[in-house]
Image (cartoon, rainbow, N blue to C red; front, side, top):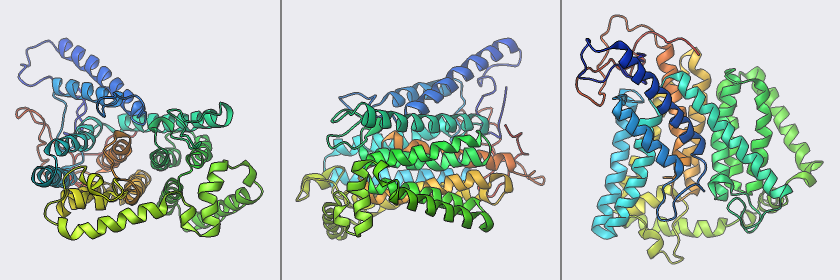
Length: 462
């Protein structure tokens, strides 16, 4: 059976079996279990942006159901590790998640609706803990396959959006809003644009590291067009910034300057001679605001600023405990949540709740920065750093991010960075490997390195 640094994907025989048992029996279960579980993991990643495949009674998608089955199979095979991002990063990830969920639940019990607090806690717990256990901790080969599937699905979503808007002329459907903005598989305009923006560094990484043919870079204009179809100012900024951060981290100055110049020339040409070919809604909502400098033309900007001011005014009274989950909208003058996750978590869960969420996501910088210091991990680390940064910046424009289409790309790229760190880690100079806390106490296998890179010898590159 394959073992990978204690951060194992495929388990040794289930604990408690003796060596006298048939090796063929163990191999049969391992092979069948491995293939079935990984096939379901691929399906979970492929359906994660498909928010329309969900139940009407509660927020539970097809991807969630598949993730649950994967979790059961992993538990059955005792293949779960509770340090999927390494010892240090996992500790801070779990500490931040605990602070966040604790703040929401306690605030809801004291000042709000306890049931809403539990509901929100369960959603975030599933998105940032259960999904982490199922997706992270895999071999680099598997994670690369999952990354390719994710990029492919986002590309299909963009192609589908171009078809339903330009050819089929849909309006007010699950994929297109009433005013003609693309909502995509996510069923939300701004969120759809954010998903495309978060997938962009993954596409660039796969091409730059030659994991897929560089011809696949032709999907980059498709992603840009998909963002335009959403008419999202936030999405356009996130898309441009994600590509810029990745390029700045991976390209040398000799290549960065010509690339930036060529990009500016292409954009200028598209805005001048190619203006008539741009989506009309993009010209109205986004391009008009950029040219005039009047942010009032950028959708509901003024309305969001008013909500932010209201949230800032409430922050002083919600330092220790907040209003409770979902209570900001109920008590707001306009009966809407503030479109800023940091302020929303602060006012509804307290300051510690907001700090916990930031700590959790920022923990991903640990494996990414460690991988960036190694030559073989520089490109994947740049991808992870780009996505984490864009994700944290985008939270200034969104009220909630417990949808699995949010957490999937973040968890996936952090896991990829850590897997790259394991592959390129040198020998431990005689240091003993730390035992990893697998789901069962007996038969533990050695864990991989912590954030400082101590761990087993490098694995072969796929």
